[in-house]
Amino acid sequence: MSLAPRAVLVHRLTEYEELLARHGTRGQAAFFLSTRGRDIQEVEARHAAQQGAMAAVAAAIPLDWRRGVVERADLSRFLFDREDVIVVVGQDGLVANAAKYLDGQVVVGINTDPERNPGVLVPHPAAAAEDLLHAAARPDVEASIEARTMVEGIIDDGQRICALNELYIGQPSHQTARYTLRDPDGDTERQASSGLVVATGTGATGWSCSIWLERQTRIVLPRCTDPTLAWFVREAWPSPATGVDFTEGLLAPGEELSISVESDRLVAFGDGIEADALSLSWGQTIAIRTAARRLRLLR
Image (cartoon, rainbow, N blue to C red; front, side):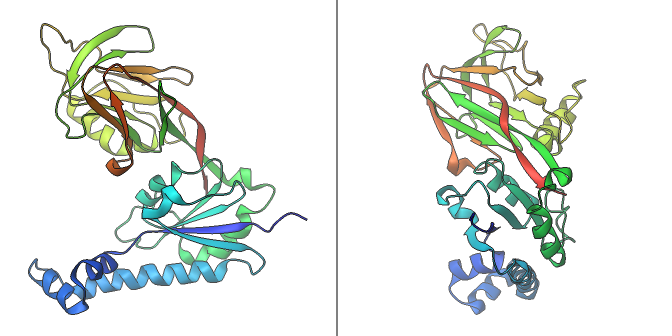
């Protein structure tokens, strides 16, 4: 007999919890906020909403299901099972934080603060959790799944990194990165820049969109389920040894963008999480492409 499904609740510490951890008491936290023109009652209200949503989702898990809870800081150490149903309770960004550690699991996004969070990746209220969990376990769940493209980087030593929004490759301090770029057509160019951003359709509303708007480029950014990636070189510097001819483009499925490092150290990290970066040293190469895995989001 097979095991019952496991619902894994993913959450992050609220601002109130972080303030208490930093300042020790509610009174000290309230004083700190008052010096910055803020009221602790606002922070407490959002904390209560988060806790209420977590309690509602936990109560909605069927009695015969297994359950688990993981805080954002512990995602890299949590062992997800293939059959888990992942319930992300929080902001859109928390889905991106979790996505890199998943491999085909169904994800249910619960929005705890609709007035502040757009809910692109967490479109559901906590009150809908029971119906959503049952839907996630049905054999015909694929009809309700939105598969979102992810991007991966593979270093020549076998290390991999995956992201839902974008990968950044460059200096950890965002200073000048030196490397040789090879595009999908085989054209190469030595470059000195502020690094590269390679984005998915989901990430096309974030960092890459800012670059795209500033450049007024003719590249059409991919949509959220489009398997194409968009890549941009940030602030490429022309010099006798470095060029600026290849600074943006699209990567179709099966195509790769290759970066050969010519700096003492570069890093590659996904979705803005610098603490979970891969290091690349002089002479190493990283290939960036559309990932085989996708985020399976329940609609």
